[in-house]
Image (cartoon, rainbow, N blue to C red; front, side):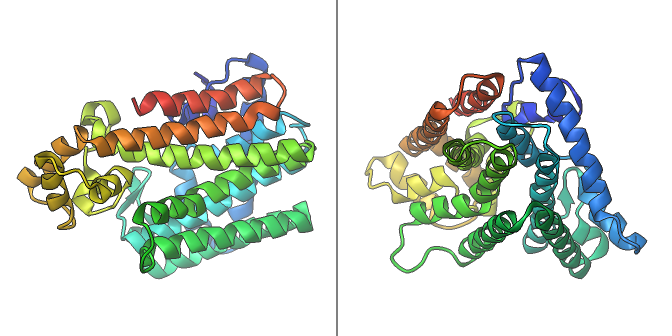
Length: 341
């Protein structure tokens, strides 16, 4: 695994940089992105600067800038536009976190008090808006096409949030709805990250499209694999309390598969009965539901779905030349497959 600065945190998403030259180049690139990020959020108002840097200083994996930098490796990764693009996607991502925490009433983010719990909802929303505006400012430096792509990505992000909040339309399949939410909320910005990297690295159009497709598919697979880990892993292994989504009534993929099942065996019927009641907060029922889910066909279906996305992501890389950056991207697919076994 990699071992330098922000690149080190990428281990949690499965990125392996086996080539020392690639690792050094990515570390230098990410340092440059960090400088742009800090400069971009600076304001004449000290409160704005402090609040805008709050989540940035709390850490984060910088997955989106990483994908910008890796995609650019198939062209010219030293182009200044690649650094700016990395900052654009990270600022956009940070802005969504401020807004998400307000909507979720989250007290903590990245191990620190959330902006909304520290300064209130109004300021948190405004700081999120400020970060979106700073991302748009940087995108304007990249040209009209970048601005259009950024605007389209922002539209998808908002649609994903609205879809998640409103729930499935009348008659809409709940599983298809859930996957569409992930495509918009998670996949869209990750896809744009790789697209920007390839574009501003000067890659040919077929490689730009392939990398964008890879990134969106990988992003969905990674989010879905989190659904499985919430159910299948114990607290020691994952570092999180198992069944948190179940307790909060979040309808993740294994739960949706279980609810859609027509199996009539006693375990499946009992599981549907518990899940249909909404959030499972009773400790005994929670333990029972978690055990039933772990042994269910629904969990197996969810694993197959995740593997399918990971396989499609890998297949998207076929048009790229064999190179350390391609091996690094393939390592992400391997990680997804391994972590859901």
